[in-house]
Length: 319
Image (tube, rainbow, N blue to C red; front, side):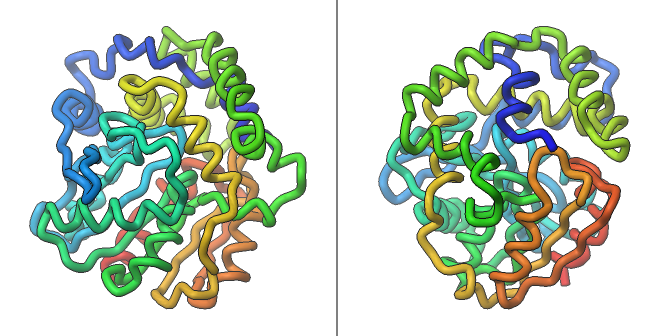
């Protein structure tokens, strides 16, 4: 099973490759939307004066769902949920974490700081109550928001989301712990890994497909992979590597709240063939969150767990 570190080591593109074309002039609507989100960011101010970038897609009159992107992604990730949002009457708001994309950095942030940022974005949009959906690295942020902003969160979905480090053995924790205990080394590692940059989008996506389970192969070389690729580039384009080190440290640190305090409905979707996030993390969250409803599939990987069940997750969020 490949770790997130292996993924970064072999496939993470350099932020300087932002000039790589997202669209070719004859691309599907989702790629056109991704390019539009990248070129024309929307922002909201936080209570402490920072700026948070976000995408606002789906049904503009629908029930609001805050989608929390993975790592290392950005608001561009929200383009993937525009069609499902329109089909199911959901307004998709995809904020990017501090230091990623156009969001201002917050170097000392913790996981429990995030719900306040979500509340500020919601207030700026005039949204009182909403659902949350965290994918991959966005999973911890969805859990934190459900726990600490529960009076405004109607329900929370998590797909292939990271869990606390207690969920896995020491080998799976090392990459995250390096950002906590040796941040300069973690940054250097990210820089060195980024030297294996992808100036060729198609070659990058092919390499991702080669390392994926069969369920994800075509997704990496198709529209989904191209949007994820653009989202990765945008994540580090403005503020460099430091926010990625911070994000990794957050994942490897104690979460700062008790999962048992979550009292809103929580839906979990995980694939046992996931090569990026160990499925044991899904089992851990199932055990620790009292309201959890788990959906675990034997043959699905990191992308396919979302694409194969996108309609089910959207319907669950809209329930």
